[in-house]
Length: 139
Image 1 (tube, rainbow, N blue to C red):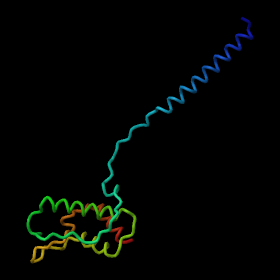
Image 2 (image 1 turned 30 degrees about the vertical axis):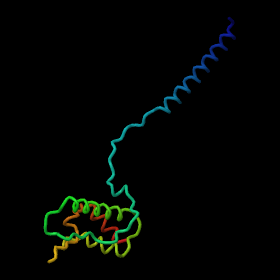
Image 3 (image 1 turned 180 degrees about the vertical axis):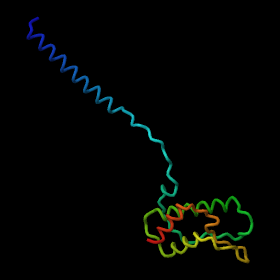
Image 4 (image 1 turned 90 degrees about the vertical axis):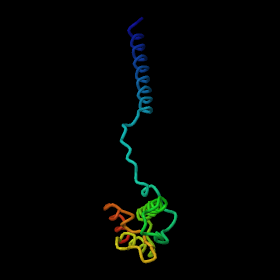
């Protein structure tokens, strides 16, 4: 084999090796797994966008007795609805502002008939949630 033929063979081998290396890197890039990040679940009220408005406060007839499981579920649902509504970005209606502001207070007690308007004593918003609500009421 002459030196010219050897040069051609070496060049062809180098080109083939280069193409193989590029194809291998491309395949490796396609199957590369991104570094894992710990998944932090978002609160439900940030995931839900309400399709309904808050039209009335949550009221219990027999507010003096211990809460039933159904009442606790209704409180959790109402709390979630308020938080979902104030984080939706949509402006609050005037009636929603009144209902939500009343729900943030802790002043209501059961009246003589045992009727209680659910408020901060039962909803137990955190300080951060109260700040979100307050900001939404100011808009």
